[in-house]
Each structure stands twice: as C-alpha cells, then as structure tokens.
Image (tube, rainbow, N blue to C red; front, side, top):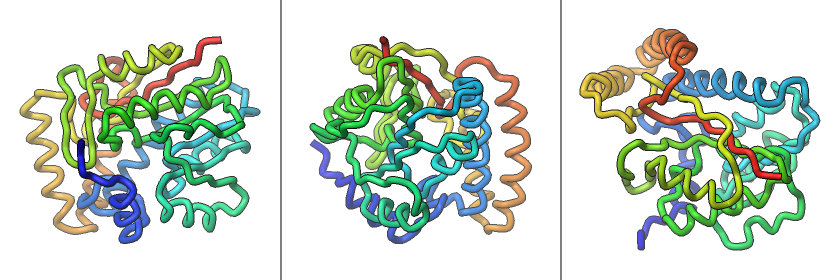
Length: 265
C-alpha cells in the first residue's frame, strides 16, 4: 500500500501554485504550460464539437476541475449546465470564487459512495486526472463511479496514457496499460467510440520507445527551464508544429490520449 497522500499532495501543490503550471507540468514554467494547455484546448474543442454537433442542451459534470480550464471550454462550446468538482479543498475554494455562477462540489471520485450524487449527467469529463490516482483499488472505484454518474447513453470523456506496454509508476502518477484501462471500463457497461492523441511532441513520450522522442523531450525540458521568455518563444514554435501533427496523425500517439466512451442504453 502506497503511503502517498494525494489530497495532501494536491492541497499543498495548489496552495503554492494555483496556476496552469500548478495543475500541469511542474518545472516546465508557466509560459510553456500555457502553450501545452492551448494544445489541450484545440483537441478538446474539436472532439467535443464532433461529439455534440448542434446539441448543447446537455448536463455536464467535470471531475477534477482544478483551475477551471475545462469549465471555460464547456462554456465556449455553448454548454451552460456544468457542475464543477474537485477533491482538493484549495481547488474547490478557488473555483467558487472564480466561478460564482457555477455549482462546485467537493468530490473524491475514488471513494465508495462518491457516486451517491442524485443527479445523473449526459456527459462526465475527467481530464488529466485518472493517471494521478496511484492506488489500483481507488482507480477501479473511480472508473465505476464515473460510469454510474452517467445517464443511459451518456458519454464519458477522459484523458489517459493507455500504454501499449506494461504499467509505469512514479510517486504521484501511474501510466496504466491500455489493456488494464479498457478492461475496467468495458466491465462497467461502456463502449469506446473514439480515441485520439492529445499530444505528439509537447508531453513526455511515456508510450514510446523512440530514443529520438525521449532525447527531444529531454532537450525541450532543459531549454524551456532556462527562462520564462525562452519557454514562451519555444512553446509558440512547438505549438504550431504540434497542431499540424495532430491534424495529420490518425493512429496512436506517444503520450496522453483523449478517449470517449458511451454508456450502454
């Protein structure tokens, strides 16, 4: 059993840095993280427009809302019925101040009974959250709870690393195998309808054995850490290349993927 305390870790981390770097890649500077989140935004908006079409009258639960970026994106898409949630008291307190018109709940999706929320949702989004659940039993409970919160026919939108090889673990993150994740999800009665790369060059190539990609990531990290100004310029250049690549690539990527699962009727 891991002694890692996720709530303490995230409350401390967000108390020190309630920003995109605080919820993103620590040490890669705020300017570079902003470019990374611009990539996330483009991927998310494109996929959600494809999913929703002209239908915007949906009830959404965003799990692990952090600093609120995905709340902004749901609003940008024209969805108004959005509930925010996080298990960090620091996050929920800041979200209530930042979004006074949004219902914000303190929710630990890994806990038994977490799906005791009476409401059911057309869409549940859980972005860049699941790979931070390091305990396997807690991860399994989270998957079950997420699906339980969906209406029949509702969709679960998530990001995960879906490794083609074995699971990789560090203290505050676990990159699980695609086989393990898909087995857990399929057992809850959902069906995969789409999976797309979220990054090609601007995130750790955790799902690649390419020495070139790992060398690239190491050099990129060393460069952007030199100064925020350098990070901004480098991020802008790589952002352009990243978006071009994401438009062209149709298969698996070397890093995080965005997946959409539909709950069976």
